[in-house]
Image (cartoon, rainbow, N blue to C red):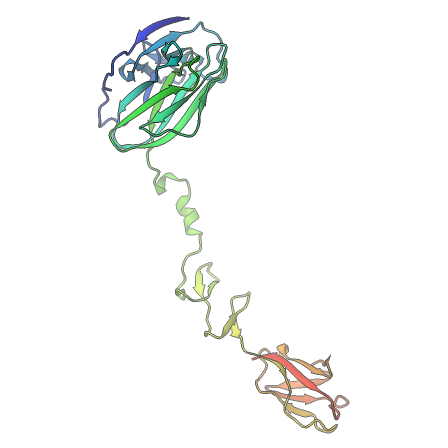
Length: 302
């Protein structure tokens, strides 16, 4: 493996502010064209600090569509028992970007280091794998017109390295960019003509969010209709219990009529065979006349 000293001084990035196209650079002294026809420029314009470019023999690099891109790397120089951090500086228009650090371990021992992006350190620690290509992806907002990348070693034996860097501007996605978005939005629930804040909401026959029709004392049924929530619980019907009287009167009219549960001495009577109901009037059938000391109770909604 041979080393070429490069980028000892801080060199400002020469990148037009109005150009927000992709930036692709690699550790090398000449341009490289990948299999997709994308050109990767030498990184010397952007690299800062005391570093070296190392060129490895063309040994296989797994997990890479363009293995040649990973077979050179910029590496921080080691000074005795420590490695000097190195950095890149890019002048960029303020925007949101997708940053990819591409690296592979070309030696026989993996290494770990950290990346600091515009002064912020992501929690993820970078670790290389021997013979493996690895990409580390970050999303970040540039708000000061520049992007700095500082790579710092964790272990002084193996210094930080990088093979290539890609910076892509993230174009905001508009509604029209999403296939069938407007169609999907048109099928969502919308407000109906009867919708009002604070009202009980129901889905009307047109699939719209509507307000339930009824008063403050109404109950909304599962089908969206409403009825009164008033009820009578354990009411004793008015009438003489003497073994002869068959007509009794309730305080209110059961609504619906089927809500009436009429009991005699705790036993539930049946509408039709035992009695009939008309409004609030109960008429007992022949043979079912309440007898002296019978206790009648009614439970119903109004």
